[in-house]
Structure formats: structure tokens, C-alpha cells
Image 1 (cartoon, one colour):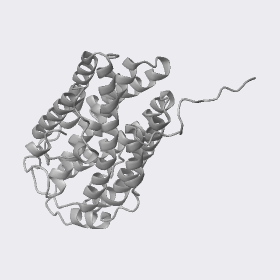
Image 2 (cartoon, one colour):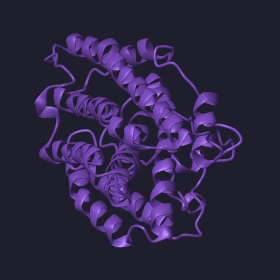
Image 3 (cartoon, one colour):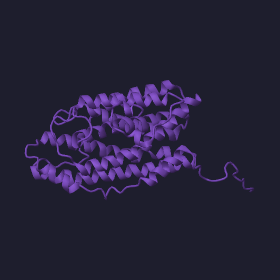
Image 4 (cartoon, one colour):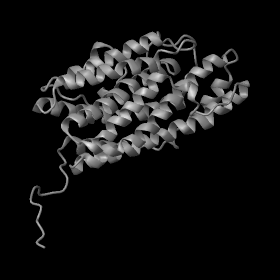
Length: 312
């Protein structure tokens, strides 16, 4: 049998490609979830809150449980996309993304074991697992079930349409809107940054938690940018109609709202819901404009809402 020589490229990798640039950024920004410091200090600060109620502490657990489960779910659900991508540069980026989602899962698991459970024991609160079903509202479950279905559909029918829908579920909704809203809530509640409107009571600055979330946000900026770039290309080429993106994101937004609107004790849910809607609008403005450049990684994960970051 005569072997056919591949003459489609001079070198295996395209160093100028969008995906390869993001992969190199992932290598440069590598971090270790077990090297994040400040957990002991976070635990001590929470133990010194003499007036904290179990209901207020429960909302911290609720937030972290949803983050941890979400990171675990997307670690599992991304594999179909990795299998259907043909370009080596895209494959390399997705491989880094799956690895990073696994790291995020490690971080939240570690924080629960080293901070959350010891604090619960200290106050005599019920010690719970981060997988306890009561932490996950119906909208949260439906969002991730639909995301899993969209990803698995790629294995049955790999088309520009199914890929766009998959990117809309995972990269543009779960990571770009839901996760970003969660980061906003954490920084507003447990650090000096963010919005004063989010916290209903004063919590100490949890530097270990915020440091880990900051690292995770840096990773997610690449993930969001990759998905936005792919969807923008499909729309610009005419392979997928803009209405597909609009319909998919609008279908998923009620699930996002349901995931963040049940905080009542320590966190004000209203600005979180408003933030998620604003984030979705900004993403759509960029994706549907063929001439718009995808913002840089740092801009994609910026949490400010002033005019200086309106492009994110």
C-alpha cells in the first residue's frame, strides 16, 4: 500500500493560531491547586465569627458545592468535543482545558475538606458532603443535564450547528455567565473587591478562597475566549444562523437565574441575577459582530462593570 504524504502544512503546529496562542498561555499560567496558601487562615477567620448562623454558613457551602460539582461535571462532559476536533492546535487547547477543569475540581474539594468541614464542626453545625442533593436546585441540574446532552450529541452528529450549540452550553453559558457570576459573588462577599450590594452581612476576607478563585478565573478566560472565537467564526461564515445562538442562550438563562436567585441569608441574589444578564448581553454583542475582536484573557475574566471594561 502506498503511503500518502501529508503536504498540507510545513510544520505540525500553527504558532499563530488562536488555539495555539491560548495553549501557550495555559502553559505560562500553570498553577498547583495544592500550593494555594491561606486555607488555615480562612478557617481561623470563619471560626472567629461568633455571630454567624448556620443558615448564613450554609450559603457559603451552597456556593462552593455548586462550583465544585460544576467543575467536576464539565471535566467529564468535555471529552466528546475533544474527540471530534480535527485540528491539532484545537486538540491541544481542549486537552489543557480538561486538565484545568480537573484542577479546579481539586481546589474546591480541598477547600471543603480543610476549611468548610472543620468550621462546621467548630460551630456544631451539621457536617455535610459537597455532593448533598439539597445544594442543587432544579435549574442547576437541568442546565448541566442539557450541557451533557449537547456535548454527547457531537458523537452522533458532528456539524457546525451541533458544535455551536455545544459551545453555547458549555463555554458561553456555564463558564462565561454562570461561573463568572459566581466569581463576582465570591469576591463581593469574601474580599474587599466587588460590589457592596451583594453581601447582606459582613464576612472576613478569605484570602485562600479568593486566591484560588482568581487562578480559576484566569483559566476560564481562555476557555470562554476559545468558545466565543469558534461561535463567531461559524456565524461569520454563514454556516450557522445567529438565531441558533440567541435561542440556545435564551433557553438556558432561566436555569442560570434559578441557580443564583435562592440566596436569602448572607447574599443578595438580585445583583447576581442582574450581573448574569448583563454578562450574557456583552458576550452576544461580541459574538454576533464579525469585526469585533475577542477580548484578551484578562478582560474576559474582569469582574468590574464600569465603562472601562464594557468590552468584556
